[in-house]
Image 1 (cartoon, rainbow, N blue to C red):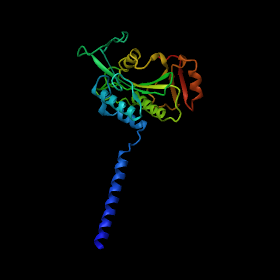
Image 2: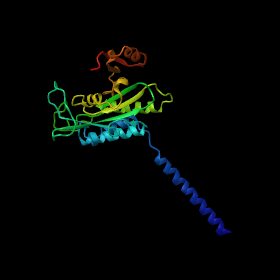
Image 3: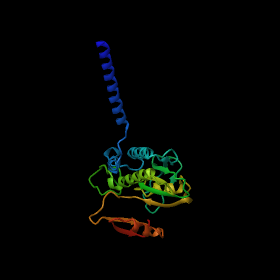
Image 4: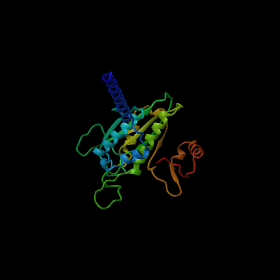
Amino acid sequence: KKKKKKKNTDMRLIVALLSVLILFSCKEEQKKPVTMKDDVVMLSSDAFGGRETGTQGELMAADYIAERFADNGLQPKGTDGFFQDFTFKPNSNPHEETEFLSERSTDSTVTGRNVVAFLDNGGERTVVIGAHYDHLGMGGAGSLHREGEAVHNGADDNASGVAMILRLAQELKQNDITEKNNYIFIAFSGEEMGLLGSAYWVKNATVDISKVNYMINLDMVGRLNEENTLAVHGVGTSPIFKQTLHSNNKGLSLSEFESGI
């Protein structure tokens, strides 16, 4: 009887131990929610080398953004999964339009990578929400740093805008009410070299662009001044933008610009 009692006790201990191990295993498998701050910290880390267009650091950032889109349950809407690559030859003349190339023809070409995701609500119209994710890399043209090369992390410009589109994607996907519009979320490459990623997508849109309702672009939204001033460009590009903006404003000082350029 003593042996039988000891055996039953041992079995109960084994079952209890297995239950504890299973519990901890399940907890480890549960992903910790990613905050906007987490996204900004990741994208602006030194590991990405400033996310200059065409660099390994930018490709690493693109992979991260694509993974975040996938985690939020969005559909890939690039030309290769979430990605839409474009190749161009950098142009030093800002007054000349950059020519996109069908393929890398010389060593002097650069390839950027847009990251495109789709939230299909079965709507007739589609809204585009975008933000560029490239930055200045190690400095150079456009940089205010004058003491040699250094990683330009670009937390505000524009990891902040990317973090916001990722958050909006999450909120709209998890929304209890299905919106009337579909949504395209695009993290653009090549902005710092002349708005190249957005120009390429418009010319090679991965949805029917005639059904796009409007676009919201988020750029440098990571900090406010003491007056809580929010600059909003393009309020004159639609007759309802101003009304919508003011009816939804909560405590911000708005600086409005008619043009979207």
